Amino acid sequence: MQEPLVTIILLTWNSRQDIDECIISMLRQDYSNYHILIVDSCSTDGTPEYIRVKYPELELVELPKNMGYRKGNSYGMQLAKGQYVIVCNDDVKVENNWMSEMVKTMEKDNSIGLVTPMILMEDKPWLINTAGNTVHFSGMYGPRAKGENRQKQETPQTLASVSGCCFMIRKDILIQLGGFSADFDNLDVGWHASFEDVDLCWRAQMLGYRIEYVPSAIMYHSYKQPQMFPSRFASYEWGRYLVVIRNFSFTTLLLLLPFLLVLDLMAWMYAFSKGRAHIASKALVMKWLIRHPYDILKMRQQIQALRKVSDYHIMSKVDYRINLNQTLGGGSGAFIINCIFGFVSFFYYHILMVILKGQDFFYNMLKK
Image (cartoon, rainbow, N blue to C red):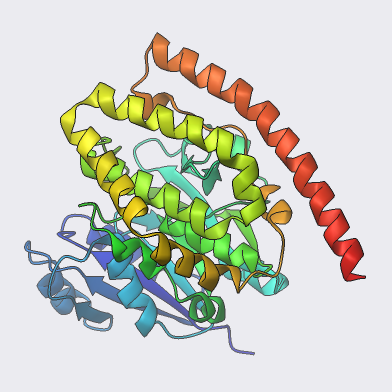
Protein backbone atom coordinates (compact mmCIF):
# COMPACT_ATOMS: atom_id res chain seq x y z
CA MET A 1 0.00 0.00 0.00
CA GLN A 2 1.44 3.37 -1.05
CA GLU A 3 2.16 5.95 1.61
CA PRO A 4 0.00 9.11 1.57
CA LEU A 5 1.45 11.94 -0.53
CA VAL A 6 2.89 14.84 1.48
CA THR A 7 3.74 18.30 0.13
CA ILE A 8 6.39 20.31 1.97
CA ILE A 9 6.01 24.06 1.46
CA LEU A 10 9.39 25.72 1.87
CA LEU A 11 9.16 29.51 1.79
CA THR A 12 12.48 31.14 0.96
CA TRP A 13 13.76 34.69 1.03
CA ASN A 14 17.48 35.43 0.67
CA SER A 15 18.10 31.92 1.97
CA ARG A 16 21.22 31.04 -0.01
CA GLN A 17 23.34 30.42 3.11
CA ASP A 18 20.86 28.11 4.88
CA ILE A 19 19.08 26.33 2.06
CA ASP A 20 21.55 23.48 1.37
CA GLU A 21 21.44 22.13 4.91
CA CYS A 22 17.65 22.33 4.91
CA ILE A 23 17.02 20.68 1.54
CA ILE A 24 19.66 17.95 1.97
CA SER A 25 18.13 16.89 5.30
CA MET A 26 14.67 16.79 3.72
CA LEU A 27 15.89 14.71 0.79
CA ARG A 28 17.22 12.11 3.26
CA GLN A 29 13.81 11.30 4.72
CA ASP A 30 12.92 7.66 5.36
CA TYR A 31 9.47 8.51 3.98
CA SER A 32 9.17 7.93 0.24
CA ASN A 33 6.05 9.68 -1.06
CA TYR A 34 6.61 13.42 -0.74
CA HIS A 35 6.95 16.52 -2.86
CA ILE A 36 8.99 19.64 -2.01
CA LEU A 37 7.46 22.90 -3.20
CA ILE A 38 9.78 25.88 -2.85
CA VAL A 39 8.08 29.26 -2.90
CA ASP A 40 10.67 32.01 -3.26
CA SER A 41 9.50 35.42 -2.03
CA CYS A 42 11.54 37.56 -4.45
CA SER A 43 15.03 36.84 -3.10
CA THR A 44 17.83 39.18 -4.15
CA ASP A 45 20.79 36.94 -3.20
CA GLY A 46 20.45 34.38 -6.01
CA THR A 47 18.48 31.80 -3.97
CA PRO A 48 16.07 30.74 -6.78
CA GLU A 49 18.85 30.57 -9.39
CA TYR A 50 20.95 28.42 -7.07
CA ILE A 51 18.05 26.05 -6.30
CA ARG A 52 17.17 25.72 -9.97
CA VAL A 53 20.73 24.60 -10.82
CA LYS A 54 21.54 22.55 -7.69
CA TYR A 55 18.13 20.90 -7.19
CA PRO A 56 16.41 20.74 -10.61
CA GLU A 57 14.12 17.93 -9.41
CA LEU A 58 12.35 20.26 -6.95
CA GLU A 59 9.37 22.42 -7.86
CA LEU A 60 10.23 26.11 -7.61
CA VAL A 61 7.75 28.99 -7.76
CA GLU A 62 9.01 32.58 -7.79
CA LEU A 63 6.77 35.32 -6.41
CA PRO A 64 6.90 38.79 -8.00
CA LYS A 65 7.53 40.48 -4.64
CA ASN A 66 8.36 39.65 -1.04
CA MET A 67 4.97 38.63 0.33
CA GLY A 68 6.12 37.60 3.80
CA TYR A 69 5.36 34.47 5.82
CA ARG A 70 1.56 34.44 5.81
CA LYS A 71 0.90 35.40 2.18
CA GLY A 72 3.83 33.43 0.80
CA ASN A 73 2.77 30.22 2.52
CA SER A 74 -0.86 30.85 1.58
CA TYR A 75 0.23 30.91 -2.07
CA GLY A 76 2.02 27.61 -1.57
CA MET A 77 -1.02 26.07 0.12
CA GLN A 78 -3.06 26.66 -3.02
CA LEU A 79 -0.56 24.62 -5.06
CA ALA A 80 -0.01 21.83 -2.53
CA LYS A 81 -0.87 18.25 -3.55
CA GLY A 82 -1.64 15.11 -1.61
CA GLN A 83 -3.28 14.18 1.65
CA TYR A 84 -0.99 16.11 3.99
CA VAL A 85 0.75 19.48 3.78
CA ILE A 86 3.80 20.58 5.78
CA VAL A 87 4.53 24.27 6.25
CA CYS A 88 8.16 24.71 7.26
CA ASN A 89 10.75 27.44 7.73
CA ASP A 90 13.84 27.26 5.53
CA ASP A 91 16.44 27.85 8.27
CA VAL A 92 16.09 24.33 9.69
CA LYS A 93 17.45 20.84 9.34
CA VAL A 94 15.41 17.73 10.11
CA GLU A 95 15.99 14.18 11.32
CA ASN A 96 15.51 11.34 8.81
CA ASN A 97 12.23 10.20 10.38
CA TRP A 98 10.83 13.72 10.88
CA MET A 99 8.14 13.35 8.25
CA SER A 100 7.27 9.69 8.82
CA GLU A 101 6.68 10.30 12.54
CA MET A 102 4.22 13.11 11.82
CA VAL A 103 2.40 11.04 9.19
CA LYS A 104 2.26 8.08 11.58
CA THR A 105 0.51 10.23 14.18
CA MET A 106 -1.96 11.59 11.62
CA GLU A 107 -2.75 8.13 10.24
CA LYS A 108 -3.62 6.61 13.60
CA ASP A 109 -6.53 8.98 14.32
CA ASN A 110 -8.69 10.90 11.85
CA SER A 111 -9.69 13.37 14.56
CA ILE A 112 -6.14 14.77 14.59
CA GLY A 113 -6.13 17.76 12.28
CA LEU A 114 -2.66 19.24 12.75
CA VAL A 115 0.61 18.09 14.30
CA THR A 116 3.81 19.91 15.20
CA PRO A 117 7.29 18.43 15.83
CA MET A 118 9.89 18.94 18.52
CA ILE A 119 11.88 21.98 17.39
CA LEU A 120 15.31 22.29 18.97
CA MET A 121 17.87 25.09 18.96
CA GLU A 122 20.43 24.34 16.25
CA ASP A 123 23.33 25.77 18.26
CA LYS A 124 22.12 24.14 21.52
CA PRO A 125 20.37 20.93 20.42
CA TRP A 126 19.61 19.87 23.98
CA LEU A 127 17.28 22.87 24.39
CA ILE A 128 13.76 23.38 23.07
CA ASN A 129 13.15 26.22 20.64
CA THR A 130 9.43 25.47 20.67
CA ALA A 131 7.20 22.46 21.20
CA GLY A 132 4.11 23.99 19.64
CA ASN A 133 2.63 27.23 20.93
CA THR A 134 1.33 28.12 24.37
CA VAL A 135 -1.99 29.94 23.97
CA HIS A 136 -3.25 32.02 26.89
CA PHE A 137 -7.00 32.08 27.48
CA SER A 138 -7.01 35.81 26.67
CA GLY A 139 -5.75 35.10 23.16
CA MET A 140 -2.05 35.81 23.68
CA TYR A 141 0.47 33.22 22.60
CA GLY A 142 4.17 32.37 22.76
CA PRO A 143 6.62 29.53 22.05
CA ARG A 144 5.84 26.57 24.28
CA ALA A 145 8.63 25.22 26.53
CA LYS A 146 11.22 27.55 25.02
CA GLY A 147 14.62 27.10 26.68
CA GLU A 148 13.64 23.87 28.47
CA ASN A 149 15.73 20.70 28.28
CA ARG A 150 14.38 18.45 25.55
CA GLN A 151 13.99 15.57 28.02
CA LYS A 152 11.11 17.46 29.65
CA GLN A 153 9.13 17.48 26.40
CA GLU A 154 9.43 13.90 25.15
CA THR A 155 5.79 12.95 25.79
CA PRO A 156 3.16 13.36 23.04
CA GLN A 157 0.26 15.55 24.05
CA THR A 158 -2.70 17.54 22.81
CA LEU A 159 -2.01 21.26 22.36
CA ALA A 160 -3.89 24.47 21.67
CA SER A 161 -1.69 25.39 18.70
CA VAL A 162 1.13 24.25 16.47
CA SER A 163 4.20 26.39 15.84
CA GLY A 164 4.27 28.32 12.59
CA CYS A 165 7.92 27.29 12.24
CA CYS A 166 6.76 23.82 11.23
CA PHE A 167 3.49 21.93 11.21
CA MET A 168 1.57 19.32 9.24
CA ILE A 169 -2.11 19.71 8.35
CA ARG A 170 -4.61 17.53 6.52
CA LYS A 171 -5.19 18.91 3.03
CA ASP A 172 -8.98 18.57 3.30
CA ILE A 173 -8.98 20.74 6.46
CA LEU A 174 -6.77 23.26 4.69
CA ILE A 175 -9.31 23.48 1.90
CA GLN A 176 -12.28 23.69 4.27
CA LEU A 177 -10.70 26.49 6.33
CA GLY A 178 -9.10 28.29 3.40
CA GLY A 179 -5.62 28.09 4.95
CA PHE A 180 -4.30 31.11 6.80
CA SER A 181 -7.16 33.58 7.12
CA ALA A 182 -7.21 36.49 4.66
CA ASP A 183 -8.82 38.54 7.46
CA PHE A 184 -5.31 39.33 8.70
CA ASP A 185 -4.65 41.20 5.44
CA ASN A 186 -7.38 43.78 6.09
CA LEU A 187 -4.85 45.98 7.85
CA ASP A 188 -1.26 46.46 6.74
CA VAL A 189 0.69 46.82 9.98
CA GLY A 190 4.08 46.59 8.30
CA TRP A 191 4.97 43.08 9.54
CA HIS A 192 4.18 39.81 7.80
CA ALA A 193 3.34 37.29 10.52
CA SER A 194 1.61 36.88 13.85
CA PHE A 195 -1.25 34.67 15.08
CA GLU A 196 -2.10 33.05 11.72
CA ASP A 197 -0.91 29.67 13.09
CA VAL A 198 -2.89 30.11 16.33
CA ASP A 199 -5.96 31.21 14.37
CA LEU A 200 -5.75 28.26 11.98
CA CYS A 201 -5.56 25.84 14.91
CA TRP A 202 -8.44 27.53 16.73
CA ARG A 203 -10.69 27.25 13.67
CA ALA A 204 -9.67 23.60 13.16
CA GLN A 205 -10.65 22.89 16.77
CA MET A 206 -14.00 24.59 16.19
CA LEU A 207 -14.57 21.88 13.57
CA GLY A 208 -13.80 19.24 16.20
CA TYR A 209 -10.20 18.38 15.27
CA ARG A 210 -7.31 17.96 17.72
CA ILE A 211 -3.81 19.44 17.62
CA GLU A 212 -1.01 17.05 18.59
CA TYR A 213 2.63 17.49 19.55
CA VAL A 214 4.91 14.77 18.11
CA PRO A 215 8.21 14.72 20.05
CA SER A 216 9.59 11.83 17.98
CA ALA A 217 9.61 14.14 14.92
CA ILE A 218 12.74 16.18 15.57
CA MET A 219 14.19 19.20 13.80
CA TYR A 220 16.73 21.93 14.51
CA HIS A 221 16.07 25.63 14.02
CA SER A 222 18.65 28.35 13.44
CA TYR A 223 16.61 30.66 15.64
CA LYS A 224 17.23 34.36 16.15
CA GLN A 225 14.98 36.16 18.64
CA PRO A 226 13.34 39.13 16.87
CA GLN A 227 12.87 42.36 18.80
CA MET A 228 9.39 43.72 19.56
CA PHE A 229 9.83 46.64 17.17
CA PRO A 230 6.76 48.80 16.39
CA SER A 231 5.41 46.95 13.34
CA ARG A 232 5.82 43.56 15.03
CA PHE A 233 4.04 44.90 18.11
CA ALA A 234 1.21 46.12 15.85
CA SER A 235 1.06 42.71 14.19
CA TYR A 236 0.81 40.99 17.58
CA GLU A 237 -1.96 43.31 18.77
CA TRP A 238 -3.83 43.03 15.46
CA GLY A 239 -3.64 39.24 15.50
CA ARG A 240 -4.65 39.01 19.16
CA TYR A 241 -7.75 41.09 18.57
CA LEU A 242 -8.76 39.16 15.47
CA VAL A 243 -8.46 35.78 17.19
CA VAL A 244 -10.53 36.92 20.16
CA ILE A 245 -13.31 38.92 18.50
CA ARG A 246 -13.81 36.51 15.57
CA ASN A 247 -13.35 33.11 17.15
CA PHE A 248 -14.77 33.30 20.69
CA SER A 249 -18.48 32.85 21.27
CA PHE A 250 -20.41 35.95 22.36
CA THR A 251 -20.86 34.51 25.86
CA THR A 252 -17.13 33.87 26.24
CA LEU A 253 -16.38 37.40 25.04
CA LEU A 254 -18.67 38.85 27.72
CA LEU A 255 -17.08 36.69 30.42
CA LEU A 256 -13.59 37.70 29.30
CA LEU A 257 -14.35 41.42 28.92
CA PRO A 258 -12.99 42.60 32.32
CA PHE A 259 -9.75 40.68 31.82
CA LEU A 260 -9.41 41.87 28.21
CA LEU A 261 -9.86 45.50 29.27
CA VAL A 262 -7.06 45.16 31.83
CA LEU A 263 -4.91 43.43 29.22
CA ASP A 264 -5.51 46.26 26.79
CA LEU A 265 -4.54 48.80 29.45
CA MET A 266 -1.30 46.87 29.93
CA ALA A 267 -0.70 46.94 26.16
CA TRP A 268 -1.14 50.72 26.14
CA MET A 269 1.24 51.07 29.10
CA TYR A 270 3.79 48.96 27.26
CA ALA A 271 3.37 51.11 24.13
CA PHE A 272 3.87 54.34 26.09
CA SER A 273 6.97 52.90 27.79
CA LYS A 274 8.49 52.20 24.37
CA GLY A 275 7.77 55.56 22.77
CA ARG A 276 5.91 57.29 19.95
CA ALA A 277 6.32 54.61 17.27
CA HIS A 278 4.80 51.88 19.47
CA ILE A 279 1.94 54.19 20.49
CA ALA A 280 1.23 54.89 16.81
CA SER A 281 1.26 51.16 16.06
CA LYS A 282 -1.23 50.42 18.83
CA ALA A 283 -3.42 53.34 17.73
CA LEU A 284 -3.40 52.07 14.13
CA VAL A 285 -4.94 48.78 15.22
CA MET A 286 -7.53 50.39 17.49
CA LYS A 287 -8.50 52.88 14.78
CA TRP A 288 -9.28 50.07 12.32
CA LEU A 289 -11.31 48.12 14.88
CA ILE A 290 -13.39 51.17 15.80
CA ARG A 291 -14.04 52.12 12.19
CA HIS A 292 -14.99 48.66 10.89
CA PRO A 293 -17.69 47.11 13.13
CA TYR A 294 -19.57 45.72 10.12
CA ASP A 295 -16.46 43.97 8.81
CA ILE A 296 -15.84 42.47 12.24
CA LEU A 297 -19.42 41.22 12.43
CA LYS A 298 -19.12 39.67 8.98
CA MET A 299 -15.89 37.89 9.98
CA ARG A 300 -17.58 36.54 13.10
CA GLN A 301 -20.59 35.25 11.19
CA GLN A 302 -18.45 33.39 8.68
CA ILE A 303 -16.32 31.72 11.32
CA GLN A 304 -19.06 30.98 13.86
CA ALA A 305 -21.06 29.25 11.10
CA LEU A 306 -18.35 26.54 11.07
CA ARG A 307 -18.61 25.84 14.81
CA LYS A 308 -19.21 22.22 15.84
CA VAL A 309 -17.86 22.32 19.39
CA SER A 310 -18.21 24.82 22.24
CA ASP A 311 -15.54 27.17 23.56
CA TYR A 312 -15.28 24.98 26.65
CA HIS A 313 -13.67 22.16 24.67
CA ILE A 314 -11.21 24.53 22.99
CA MET A 315 -10.44 26.57 26.12
CA SER A 316 -9.58 23.37 28.01
CA LYS A 317 -6.46 23.15 25.80
CA VAL A 318 -5.26 26.70 26.45
CA ASP A 319 -3.26 27.88 29.47
CA TYR A 320 -3.54 30.47 32.22
CA ARG A 321 0.26 30.80 32.20
CA ILE A 322 2.31 32.75 29.71
CA ASN A 323 5.74 34.28 30.17
CA LEU A 324 5.65 38.07 29.79
CA ASN A 325 9.31 38.56 30.75
CA GLN A 326 10.56 38.28 27.19
CA THR A 327 8.10 40.85 25.87
CA LEU A 328 8.67 43.23 28.78
CA GLY A 329 12.44 43.04 28.42
CA GLY A 330 13.32 41.25 31.68
CA GLY A 331 14.39 42.84 34.95
CA SER A 332 12.80 42.95 38.42
CA GLY A 333 9.84 45.03 37.25
CA ALA A 334 9.00 42.57 34.49
CA PHE A 335 9.32 39.68 36.95
CA ILE A 336 6.86 41.29 39.40
CA ILE A 337 4.34 42.07 36.63
CA ASN A 338 4.67 38.52 35.33
CA CYS A 339 4.00 37.06 38.80
CA ILE A 340 0.95 39.27 39.41
CA PHE A 341 -0.41 38.52 35.94
CA GLY A 342 0.04 34.78 36.52
CA PHE A 343 -1.72 34.92 39.89
CA VAL A 344 -4.76 36.80 38.53
CA SER A 345 -4.85 34.61 35.40
CA PHE A 346 -4.96 31.43 37.48
CA PHE A 347 -8.14 32.39 39.31
CA TYR A 348 -9.83 34.05 36.35
CA TYR A 349 -9.24 31.06 34.09
CA HIS A 350 -10.55 28.48 36.54
CA ILE A 351 -13.68 30.52 37.29
CA LEU A 352 -14.22 30.99 33.57
CA MET A 353 -13.89 27.25 32.91
CA VAL A 354 -16.46 26.41 35.62
CA ILE A 355 -18.98 28.74 33.96
CA LEU A 356 -18.24 27.46 30.44
CA LYS A 357 -18.48 23.85 31.61
CA GLY A 358 -21.88 24.52 33.17
CA GLN A 359 -23.05 26.26 30.03
CA ASP A 360 -21.83 23.34 27.91
CA PHE A 361 -23.60 20.83 30.17
CA PHE A 362 -26.98 22.58 29.92
CA TYR A 363 -26.58 23.07 26.17
CA ASN A 364 -25.99 19.34 25.69
CA MET A 365 -28.96 18.54 27.94
CA LEU A 366 -31.22 20.71 25.81
CA LYS A 367 -29.98 19.02 22.62
CA LYS A 368 -31.05 15.65 24.02
